[in-house]
Amino acid sequence: MALKKGDILDEFKRYQHACGLVVKVMGGGEGFEKIVCCGHDLTEEDLVPDVVTVRGRKKGNLPPAVVLDEKKLHPNSCGLRVMIIDGGAGFTEIRCCGHSLTASSMKELTYGQLRGPEPGQNAPPGTA
Picture 1 (spheres, one colour):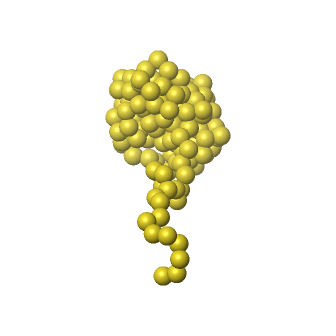
Picture 2 (cartoon, rainbow, N blue to C red; picture 1 turned 90 degrees about the horizontal axis):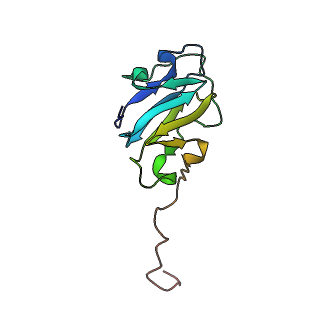
């Protein structure tokens, strides 16, 4: 089953006593197979139209707003990128294109830094 950008999977849809993992697809997803969390397989059956605020979601090692990026480890894959929205204490892996994405697939976000090299000065230092 393929996922598309904007899809949201919520563990609480079928497993109310789990950690309540919620992920949002940021890109890719044609080779998506499943997400394994708390011993459950999350599939297309766990798609929800919107994030529902529910008490009892348990956060794990993956903090909210972290992006897991398949391309980081597998450049020839479909490039699934998902953002952890909430929960995740029981997160094990995401299976996509025959690969396993774990916490090691985390994309580091650095705020306040330019994407390219620092621009050089266009004038010699001195007084203005």
